[in-house]
Length: 451
Image (tube, rainbow, N blue to C red; front, side):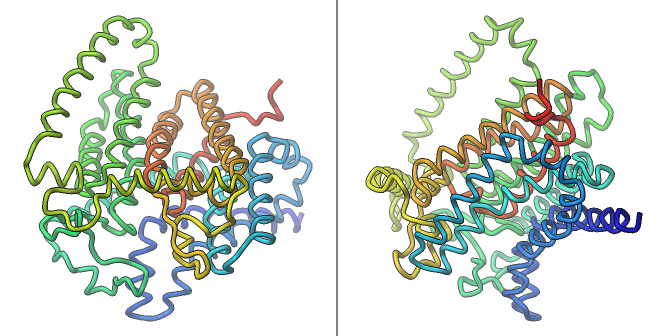
């Protein structure tokens, strides 16, 4: 009896650490930099989120060992878990036999596996302590945190001095740039709020925006107008903050998220009125293409910088040309080395690589292909596909706004990951994969229990 009580306490502690991590992550860069630079302990504070992940795993292990038969049946035999174990094992093998720089290799290993470990253990915590770890509690934490982030971002743009973060200790030396501008032009300021950079902020906001938009649409469809005004107001604040980040990848991701969300929520209505919707869709696309043509030909400095991030005064290399160049070079390298070049040889981890140097792909999928090869990339895509499939299955079992919000945000993030190293960012990766795992454990059904 005493043993069972200790296991329950250990599991509950892990659950509380997990919730605290979800609440803390959106402010991690800000708090660790400001406190670390001005008070001390910068390196420890930077590592605090990884320490929290380690604590979650450590505190959950007693429950796993005590309930091994159940864990084996419901977790280890699950196809998603099997693929994750294969992918993590493969990453460890690459780390052992194919690292050319220890610091970048260990960083690459952490970046590539951390969120998948959280996915597995968040699912276990949902089973061990459902009163603490459940999708509603986590969603509330995400929305409240994101509203604070969005409001601080708007204050950063309209009220606070543009160099406020530099005054608080942000600097390239400390690993956090104090400000961002479109094409380094001082009159085109981009907010990042408490995040690492504007693109991260935009991608992060896709998660709460999708969740709130899902709630809004489902309440509207049910003819329930309770709190719709409050929801709409919060949604406008977060969309406005996303817009002020001037992140083109996040805007495209938002469009994709909204499209997927409305398609799922109004699936029956779309089927019933397929002809009308097709005509409207074609008309909308025509208008969009025509409007886009005028925009593309516009000589407006604001249009050229905000949409294309370049104009005739651009000194730096055109970012659009850079992305195409990254794409071409990365595809060639993957073709030349289909087994991969090793962890830490591409993406943000490569910034620590003293052997091969920095190699940014601006594309998470290409980064994985370069690091662990085509097989590793296919396994990772397989994990994503199976998680999405399980979420859709959970949606059909339980028409919950959180599930469809997670699905919609995944669609948007799938796009932003093709334009940046988004899953490398601990805030976005841990929050999305953690919530997805909780939704699947709470509303879905593992493969091992399916007949």
